[in-house]
Amino acid sequence: DSGVTQTPKHLITATGQRVTLRCSPRSGDLSVYWYQQSLDQGLQFLIQYYNGEERAKGNILERFSAQQFPDLHSELNLSSLELGDSALYFCASSAFRQETQYFGPGTRLLVL
Amino acid sequence: GENVEQHPSTLSVQEGDSAVIKCTYSDSASNYFPWYKQELGKRPQLIIDIRSNVGEKKDQRIAVTLNKTAKHFSLHITETQPEDSAVYFCAATPNTGNQFYFGTGTSLTVIP
Image 1 (cartoon, rainbow over the protein chains, first blue to last red):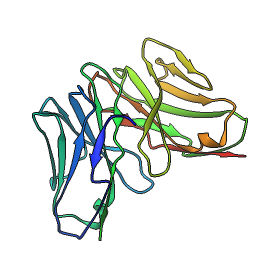
Image 2: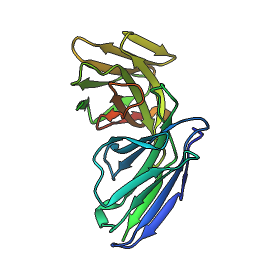
Image 3: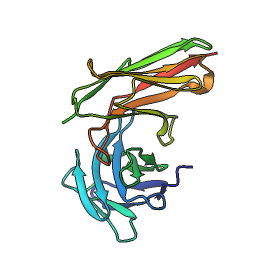
Image 4: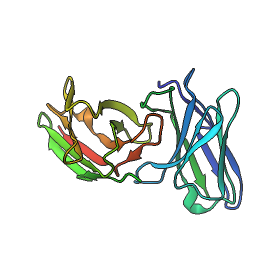
């Protein structure tokens, strides 16, 4: 157990819908990262937040957005969902000035 | 930005043999290189990492080597066991607390 939690574990929805994925970082970690992993694909970096502020942006679609709240948990919002958005979504966290990222168990999203 | 290439994409070895996975990176400013193991449907787990001021690091049957001049680093697993079967990802990052740039993964199968 990495100490990073994600909810829900599984999510099934229809095209055009909107979902919210939640991540709680390890206690004390200020940075949260979101990654997308499609079937048989690698880990695609989406976005990073540090202490509530957006820090880095990767290949995140305009239909996707994220935020980090004062209690440091983060939410990834996916809207106007398409079949191709079906994937595993991981969040990871790291401590201040520490490189190591610890991954959560992921949310498996299936868009039908 | 950084670009990480990983080879091979698949690797099969007999139990007890060694396995080597290689990664190259493009940004000479990268200074932290973690390796993650991901079992099917599970979260990536850090297995070993190396910083740019070190050329080699070992942890039991696992070792990582780094050649900064050639910009490549490798994962070595000795005396492989069936439970080593998984997908392995390398990554590089140029700055503490910034995003990881992941390789495309190597699916390792250890044949009993």
